[in-house]
Image 1 (cartoon, one colour):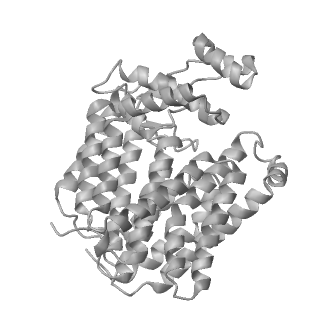
Image 2 (cartoon, rainbow, N blue to C red):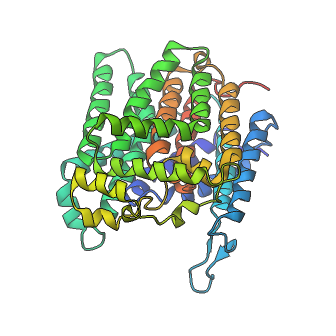
Image 3 (cartoon, rainbow, N blue to C red):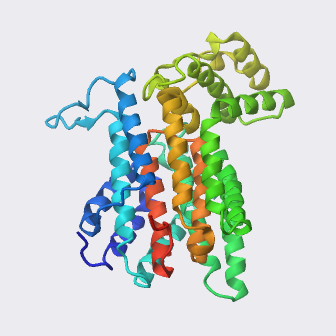
Length: 428
């Protein structure tokens, strides 16, 4: 049932107004924002087309739900009680599936928006992005003072710095849209210079904030934009086909990366260095159950410390000192910080193959970049690059808040495409 083809754009814009606020609060609220947007947009949703992409998505999500039932944390669907205020949905596969369903509803609702009908909503969304840019810049310049100010209510050593990095990653997902939107404002050189300045200052802010994931994301964003410019007919196929190959080959690729980094002796930040051993341990676990995996969130229970691996402990101590601190430090603090490896470890080859199949069908289902208007073409490509970086180095695969933010950012790109003309999916 579709009601009012012009009315969903303001709803999406309202959710994006909350984007900077949610990001500063640790980014966990994006799952709630997606749920609210899906509920408000349900009246504009028509029945989705049952095609290969839809079937591939259903197959992958179904397997992920099933993988939750043999995970070590599969104690029940619900935990806590409503009376005590501790009630929650405990199975990550179910939360992942519900987030995917909500995101699908939002994207379908965006396609109910009439062309040329949402300039104000897009301006509001861009304004929210620039507000977050201002916040990111202030945070980068005055991080020490901000951490000291918030110390009474938030741990200034671990919790608050993590929230600031999540904020930077959330802003990074809007950056491709902001750059493309600003670049398209007109032929006046000030817009060109403004776009370059936005990108350069954002990169500098990421450097000052110390988020390596965002720095890598900037380079992958630009690379993805370059690919769709160089290959206007096959750009999206190349990007999603490459991601599919990356997921399938992840155990081998990460083994090569780890070996190469150690052989070259490249100095690495402590956090990135620790992830290389995390990836090595996950690779070892993959060989123990390569077909179906160990079940969702199994990596949370792999509590090996560097003290359990004397060679790793010796390497870490020789590089950074503080042997005792490394000795008790968990190799995998909470998850592998690589979604591709996590899929292999927790959902096995079957999960990786289904994920790769979905990515291939998505790349073939999208219209070629040449059919997209300029803003959405480069915003879409940039978002793909950004997500590739974040998925490779940051969150857990089953972090529904992260996927909520991805779905909202994708909805913004599709809204821009709808406003500028018909683009997005091929006809089946």
